[in-house]
Image (cartoon, rainbow, N blue to C red; front, side, top):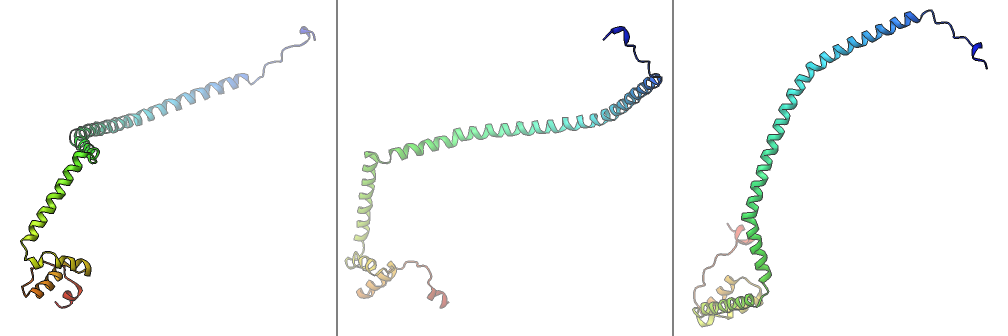
Length: 170
């Protein structure tokens, strides 16, 4: 192909008209953008004020929560941790020989105190009513009353829970 044989096409007769329309479209778009910017700037001022208010409120709440967390943690460290540590120490030492000896001494003292308390009862009432009650499965007050009748003595008064019969008889 020879370069000299091709000629440039002739310009479109409406090229000037198209350029004017394109310039007008650009000016219209610029006007629209300016109007939109003015509207959004007014809106943005309101939104900026609201955003600032919400942010300050949230920061205040976050600061309060941080202070509360610090206070709660401080209380946990000073009040509850020592109690927990003491509990763990007691639980860890529970099976120690010293604790077993202490528990044995306490049990021995309980048995001696119980025996001393029974010694104050009349001889006939020290054991029989208790063993009868265990065998019969009856409350202690009924067993004492039965033994008191046998001995012709008044029964020891003990409070007892109301039964169906006593409620019905009221």
